[in-house]
Length: 362
Ligand code: NAD
Ligand code: IPM
Ligand code: MN
Image (cartoon, rainbow, N blue to C red; front, side):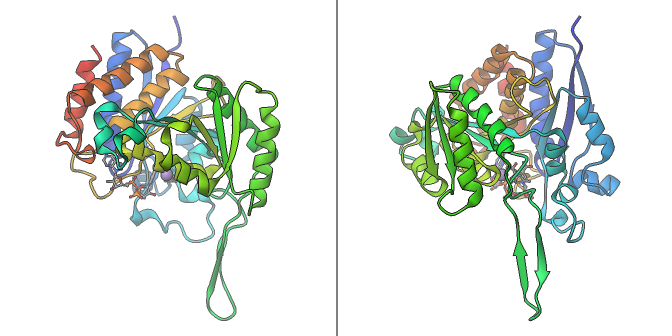
């Protein structure tokens, strides 16, 4: 008999626990229906962990993650934890999620978005402009500005301050992510758009050079390079022209929230963060959105981004694309019958959306 699938659940903060509870019900139901054996453990991350243990991410949590096949994370953060611990701490010490991503080296973050027919009129686009949009932002997740050193805020002689961050990228960090980009493009529509600021940044020059060099091994993939500013504009002007968009950590963060508008809400977007494709190493599944402090605790958060993250888990960590499709179909069914949360203009609660998706799974 196969080993049980080991899942570590880290609900996080704000709406994190609400959306994770819904997604976990979908995961457990499908595993039960398909007789997939699981071993599920729960722990705390970031704000919730700080309050209980005085650490944003304990060594025990990292050890437990290393022994897992996958992590399901809600979202982390809140203003009350933003300035803890004091200046000088590393990014990983200040943010539980950044530590986990770095420890597991989940450098390839896949963030798909698409236009759903029942939601076309709920986007900021003319329906005919966004219809058919189906994009995957591949965000490099373990390098660049969020992790670069030196970084700091220094006091100058005149009493004013100077802040600085560093955008380091090695050729190998770029290459390994580009490889995933070409491979993912090959499994989709065969187009890769790499975005950078090589007109003004050294890291952009190396990024473009290494992506082009990597592309030599993928002659069947159509590769285009765009400056990131123009790219974001083009993604709004002609959404259907994009397939896979490859970006560094910061540009990918911006691009993935931006393309959420195709789907009608940031609450719709899932992600899979992998240490390479088919590596067998622990992967992180989480929605793209944050902790939404403005609606936390009300039971009205859209759980679909997290539920679709579970679909990506079936696809990338369990090699069960069939079950991923089953969840995606259940989500579409839910939208089709109009059971929608407030961010999509509906009035359904998190639980009602979840119930609808669970019943459509049958
Ligand atoms: P956010 O994504 O939390 O919220 C942006 C807007 O989208 C808000 O109006 C919110 O209500 C709405 N929204 C987000 N998810 C939703 C959902 N599932 N259903 C309905 N509406 C939803 O971004 P923010 O306000 O800039 O950040 C809040 C906190 O979350 C910050 O502490 C930030 O650092 C953190 N954050 C965490 C993650 C993560 O853990 N991956 C991602 C982004 C932001
Ligand atoms: C995301 C978030 C995170 C990031 C924050 C909360 C650390 O914005 O996952 O998109 O910047 O990566
Ligand atoms: Mn983000």
